[in-house]
Amino acid sequence: MESDSIFFHFYCNFATMITRIAADKINGLAKVFKAIAVTGPRQSGKTTIVKELFKHKPYVSLENPDSRRFAIEDPRGFLKQYEDGAILDEVQRTPEIFSYLQEILDNSIAPGQFILTGSNNFLLQQNIAQSLSGRVAFIYLLPFSVRELYPDNNTNLQENSILLNGLYPPVYDRKIPPQDWYPNYIRTYVDRDVRQIKNITDLIVFERFMRLLAGRTGQELNLSALAVETGVDTKTVQSWIGILESSFIIYLLKPHYRNFNKTITKRPKLYFYDTGLVCSLLGITAEAQLANHPLRGNIFECLIVTELVKQRTNAGMPVNLYYWRDKTGHEIDVIVDNGDTLIPIEIKAGHTINSDFFKNLLYWNNLSGMKKGYLIYAGDEGQQRSNGIEVISWKKMAGI
Image 1 (cartoon, rainbow, N blue to C red):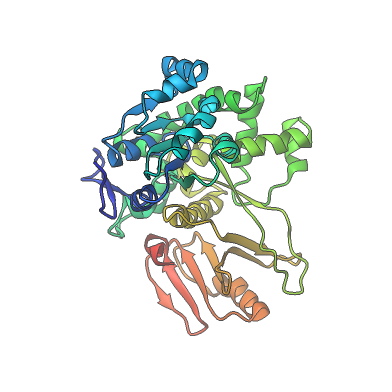
Image 2 (cartoon, rainbow, N blue to C red):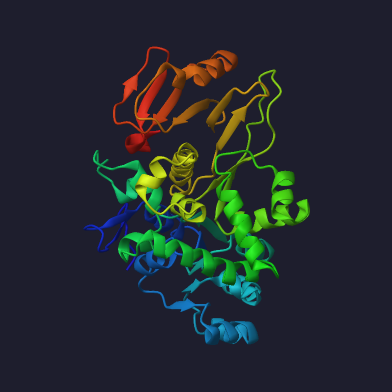
């Protein structure tokens, strides 16, 4: 049964229910596009949401060897079973069927016929661009957002708990301890997805590379330095970055292109889509350990940046986030580019507001002529400053 309600209610053992905000957009797209592609990292809840929203459609997992072999060897015969549409899960595993899907979609005017899911954005987009361009709408489904997990802005929520546990659904709906779930997730990801995308012979080196990246969360991406530390060439590092980006492990925040008459940094900043994954890669297994960790501020910044990303992806909108840094060290953590306006956001992991928190915002506003900005911090109190800067608790940032 398709639901017209704004939210999809995901029942689990963690609480009464967890709400997936993207459900409203998926339903809306399915009413006007012939096919919908829901893509995102493994275990982010893609299968759960599409099976619930489109209960009337047959479901086929192309991870299943028999189904995959049928689709590869006889794509026309495979799709003939589903002339009225279906959910095709992990469809990037069978690129052979996309041309045949085009024929089916072109012979019908009905919207929402096929729901495609995939955990590799590069392979899925590549196949769709070749055969289904203009017929398919894309939406990204990332792990839970804080708003989905705690819709009532729970003031008792502790950021170290969220940072350590991360926001992947299995940690909550199946009650799997993060110190058990994340190492197995990493191992499964490396063994299955990395081999699928690129034939990397030394997976141990690749996993060590991921740990090196975790130690650079919230920092500029320096390919040369990573190549030296990993013991591979720069082209290999660049290729591995592409693999991790296309499979939703890392997110690269690009520098903003306007320089305001200053020389600016041109390298992207590196973030992971999930802080629980970062903590696992860094060997952080307890909140007390995280509280005193030298990268705690970077991990908190990672959480806020990815929360802002989820606000856009859950609404089916392109991500319009950047950062800004000049050669003298002035930096704005996030610039929201709305076309006619730029909104600066500074992120601080401290619980107590002090004047140093505002320095870069005031500098950038003076340089750019803007008169607005946000400070998101780990404390609880909100403030509206006379200088146009609004202070917001990380628990209440959904309104930005």
